[in-house]
Length: 437
Picture (cartoon, one colour):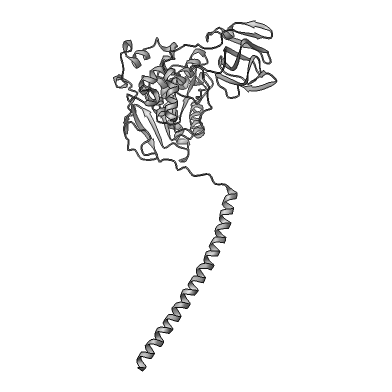
């Protein structure tokens, strides 16, 4: 039933097209320090408003609402939302798209922030949230599989099919980006929209390294230095990520950077170096690299999933890429979809095939099974929780029971022994009497 329930949620959701935002309360008023503003409710992610710390943002509507949905510009800030003598902390989780549920229906709320903040849009809702509204959960504490995606959109391109396959198979997949797109904030929105479209609900880790193009590892390292970072910073970042999420499997780019992108190369090179810094316990069971030739594995992303209402993993990934509107002019679009959207199968992608991986590292042997990255990984043994006090009681009772049983057993042995002696004496007397006669 759980799968069926999720399926029903996905039926309308997966038909939503990119950039469609509807079913919100339109008649709202927003004022900053008692001055009305329009940029925060123009349904336009290309506009934003900068506000100073402690500025009073007053949001009101003649319709009652109990959800406030905030789209931040580049990063969220910590603040407070006030209504009916109630205060709720906001911005603490760092979600760029933050949905706040109120405990009551109201017509007005106030927002204040501890630092200067920039916001693109604020939406209000009453009871029902449309599917495009993102109610993010925190990143996983423990991931089954960790994907290092270099840029926003790589997860739907060169790793097309991977995320939906893992989600449909009930695997906890954590997405980690190497770079950020703070110089192009629209891509930050597309990043979250794309993940949400394919069913990711745990917030990704957004990269700290600026996006910069190069065609080699050296070029990527030079770009890092221009931004005040070093190669060791990237290596430590990836090592710390693995320690944090403790994944069974890690997946990364082609060593050659697919089409030769220096930051793709840097991402995979840094992962390999990071593995050398980890203890045996800290390392994942397996590391798969895209297009790696040794110990190859072929994934199948053309299988319909009930979880996705009969769609294949490849088809779902296309929905994720559809959210990356700013990138649709690039050659990636025809590569993923085919010219005029002619591709219906992932197997039709011939260059940099998203189906092809190789097992770079393993703690459980290098035998592969096509379509199953988790092959040979031991299943976790789930132990029932133990209550300490109950344990002590059980131990004491066991000792008492054992002592009682010992006494009972000794008594039985005594009876049996005595009966045996009497029987033997009786038999001896009988034998002696017979000899006399």
